[in-house]
Image (cartoon, rainbow, N blue to C red):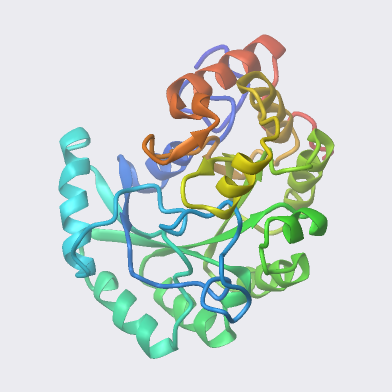
Length: 314
């Protein structure tokens, strides 16, 4: 827009949205279709732990209803049809979202991902996983696939702070994360990192430090979430036993804007707030109104006359 100083925008957004990236990359609307591939996680099966990260839901933080069918391709096409009611001509990516989608032998991974690579109507694949579940042979395999289609690797970090990581039972160190980033950075794979604002005991300064550290790494995109207290998670039990004060909408908006100011303008923001399922979300309830959250961020950025990267030292 005429009065928007941010260069990577098709509308009033003062940060580089996922939608902007996809429209400029593929010249039309692209939707990510979530798939539950029935993986588990080393932090649940006893390899590293039994209960997972304390914030993680029973669905492995997948924010969509689990499909009763285990046929992955059938899941994909069912959900794509639902999305095409809203965006009739959209292109689609397959999004393997729940749990740890590289936590299996290479031959198993090939049986899962190869069929999606062979579909002409699927333009890319997004794979949610853990930094400690990316062997070199797995990375080499995915990098080979990326010669044909865009492949995104989404890594759950949540925070750079080890004290918080231990408190939320992440079961993966920051050094392991940095090792994974280094390995991935030497390939043609695209890297997206997830962080969570409002984790227990974290201050605003700590949340900003997480973003400042990520701004210096060779990653392509970031997802920023507000902490959700989800029914069935370990954190839900902790919260009910001893509730603590969660971030307000106003506090969250303020923190996100200051995080955006510290990120390079070329970094894609795939998400600025989460999509909690209403029947499972215990708190904070304001996160259910995603459009309002995003609108408040947009309005406050205009009021402050700021944009993504404004505080990045060139």
